[in-house]
Image (cartoon, rainbow, N blue to C red; front, side):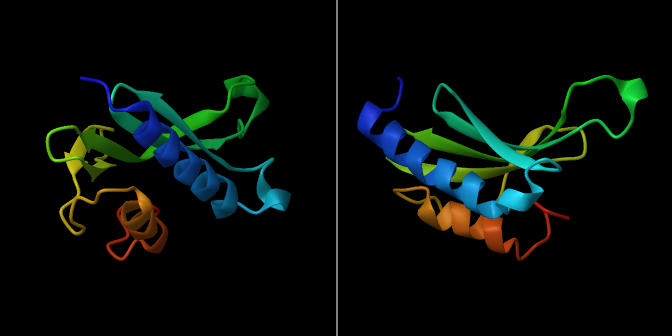
Amino acid sequence: MPMPAAIRDDAMRHVSLFCENRVPEHARDEVRLEHSVRGNSITIVERRPPWSELVGPDWTSMKIAQLRYDERSRTWSLYAADRNERWFLYNDVEPAPDVGPLLAEIGEDPTCIFWG
């Protein structure tokens, strides 16, 4: 069952602001944070320009985090990507009714799992 539009829209606003505020404007030609929605998940990715003309014009993507909404509990959970870019539940923050605490955890990154 898809998440309610109001919940999705609120989460998207918060995630958009997080991505926009995380990278200073002067650095956005070198790195960007973007997000996408699929079903009940919002995925945050880091994008970087090609490091060499030989690799082509496409920016590379690295998965940073995924926020998943559970309709039954009406909470969001945080997932991190492993080295093979497979998602696993990040257990150091509890599920929350809104994405704010999860975005704060990504930003602070006390375990160095999101930003290295």
